[in-house]
Image (tube, rainbow, N blue to C red; front, side, top):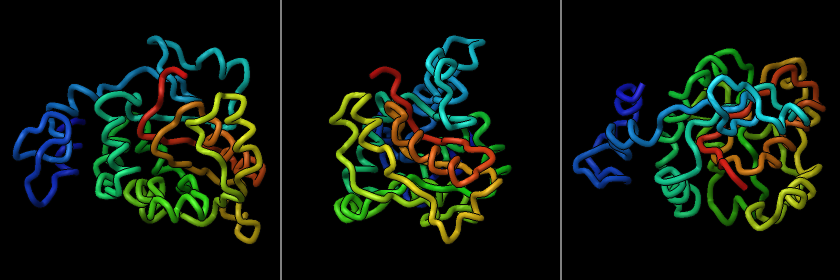
Length: 233
């Protein structure tokens, strides 16, 4: 898996590995991918790390989320937190190809992309898009499945406060009703298999709110894909 990941993300010009600074190397060298991207057992519906042999975490068993499946490539920790910060906040969309390949190399992600009818990025508000200059989830989705990606089908109805500044109950209130499917194109969702893409999943509030909107629009199966998952709040 790791050799394939490096081969598919190899840049046309040599550069330093962003983690160990090896030169020349790809954006993340083979040794660092092998060291920091080992697969972990994860809850199948929220992607939290769980003990081996466990398929769902206790929270998902008590309160099933609106996702049928959820997959994360890595935990949100060093070095991936730094790589994602460079991608998301430091105006470096070139990271999208490397991060998308990391995600696509994760167990069960490739079959989910092959079976789905549409790949939808988490939408940004107009204000946030203007500040950032690009939608990081859209760039990931385009590299995961360019022929299936639709960046306008799932809508963000209003701007919201940054989730990182809020506790879990406030995060859930913050994004409640913030997403909807374009009513003029809802047939693209109804009775279809949909993949929802984002870069980082923290509490799951945003991803679950978007999935709830897709479920309300009639989606038959919803899979969440994220590059990184936080393990503790």
